[in-house]
Length: 330
Image (cartoon, rainbow, N blue to C red):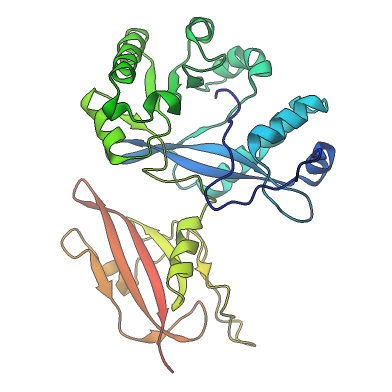
């Protein structure tokens, strides 16, 4: 938990709302706000330890993106700061519960507006929540706030990480925070890591937890699977299996392809389905990490396809399997 995110328009996103006032009440009443999730990675363990829920408000009706910093400023000006903060938290928690329920070890980072933060810290700490101080090194996230909140996690602002590989003072500040927080038993996350050089500079100085576009941008759950379909239009559907052979995601279907009419037998499998008997799972292990099936009739669509599966390994074991169903000529 930390202070409100001030992320701007995502790359490729269209900022909406125009130059006039945003109707915050309409957004709150319609619930026109989504959460995107950006992973926080452990570079030493080579795994994702959590995700940060980032608000993506939209103009009701048109769906145009509104930069979060403008949304929160308008909400405060119109007297809806608490309601806006509550909607962001609600969407972030609901989306996490729906999309990441198969990963109980993951942490979810939910931002709180600085104006109401102090009221929440102690009550939520008593309930077992971890407290994270966001954007450390800028604004109100200063050393005084560190002593008041006694956070479990400190997230260093991206301005301290940008070009850290070539700037001596930023390296010294990073070392200072690592040393200081280690005395308190507090973890440090480097925010805004955008290049390999920045990641290596943090690692060389003893850093572990990082977050930024170098690893992954904020995205909707399932966005990576949808991106596969956008890049490769012959992909009919995409889905993930866990290392035990159960489906770890819903089946993401190519929107340009419809199900065979009148064939209710065929429908895409959902998360949790048992795929342990399928060749595209049985044929995968630590030595054979890719598999190409023979043509068959897909139970997802009723059309001829082949399945390509490829494994991601962790510590020599299969951690996840990406499966792509590719359409074949009739």
